[in-house]
Length: 422
Image (cartoon, rainbow, N blue to C red; front, side, top):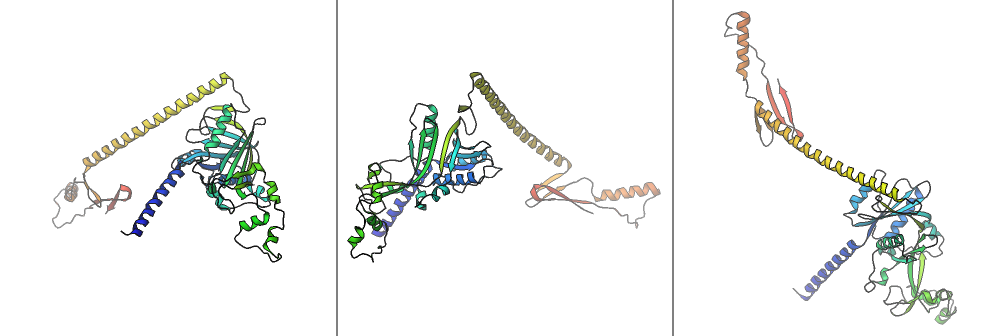
C-alpha cells in the first residue's frame, strides 16, 4: 500500500471515530417531545411549533399527536428515542397550562401561562430580524437569573430547566456553535418566570459604520460619489451610533476566532441579541411526584391538612394494591387459558384417533374411516330383499346402492375442510 492509500485509510478511520463520538454525544444529550393534550386552539398549536424551534435540534420537530393517542403511547416511544422530557400544553376555561415532565419517573411541574407572544408577532416588530436557519442546528445557551434561594420548589424548578438543555464544557466549546440563548428570569416578589429566546451575534468594536459594512460583505460598495476611499471611510464620525450603543458591559475579549469578519482572537467584540420569540410568562402551580400523576408535593393555591394528606396517601396505597391484585389475577387467567387450550387440543386428537386413523402429509391431511366398506351396503340390500320378498334375489338383478365417499383436505389457516362427493 502506497503513501496515498495509507493516508486515505487513516482518514477513514478518523472519520469513523469522529462519527462515533458525535453519535455518543447526541445520545447523551437531553431530548424532548413538545405536544398538546386535548383541544387547545390554533394559537396554542402555533406556540407549540415555536417551542419546538426553541428546543431544536434535540426534539421531534414534526411530531404528530392525534386525539386517540394517550400519554402511554408517548411513553412507549420515548424509551427507544432517548427522550428525557415532555413539554405538554393544555388549555382550560381559565387559562393555558404548560407541563414539564422528567422521564421515566418524574417529577412533573405544572406552570400556568399567564401571558405569551408568538414568534411571528415578535419578529413582525423587529426592524432587522435574524432568521438564519443555521442557528437552529445547535442547541441554545441557557442563561438563568434570580433562581438562587433556599426554597425547595425553586431549587427543583432550577434543576428541571438546567437538565432540559445539554451542558457546556467551557474548555472544549466552540464559539461558532453558540448561536442562540434562552433566558429565564425569576421574580421572587411576583413568583413569575419570564421566558425569552434570543439570537446571538458578535460584532467587532472600534470600527466605523462604513468599515463594518465593508467587512461584512464580499462585494465592493458603490464609491462612484467619492473621490477617494478615505472619503467613504471618513464620511461619518469614527465613533458611530452603533458604537454608542455598545457599552462596556456588552464588550468581551474573544478567546477564539469566529466566522464573522473582524472577530479575531484576543480582540474586543460586542455581543448583540436579537429576539426570536416566543415570549412566555410562567407561574408554578403544582409539582407532582410521577409523570402527570402521583403524590402532589406542592400546590400554589390549595393547602391540605395532615389528615387530608393521610387519607389521600391511604387511598393511593389502596389503589396500588388493587392494581397489583388485578395484574396477578390477569396473569393467572392467561395461564389457565393456556392449560385449557392444551387440554382441549389433546382431547381433540384422542377423539380423532378413536374414530379413525389420522394421516398427515406434507401438502394435505387426510382422515380415513375404516368402518364398513361398500360391500356392507350391498349385503344390507340383499338382506332387505329377502325380508320383503321372502326369496333369494335373482342373480341377474342389479341392486343399486348409494356409495358415499368422504374426503378431507387441509384448508387455509390449518383448519380441515370437509367436501362430500355423492
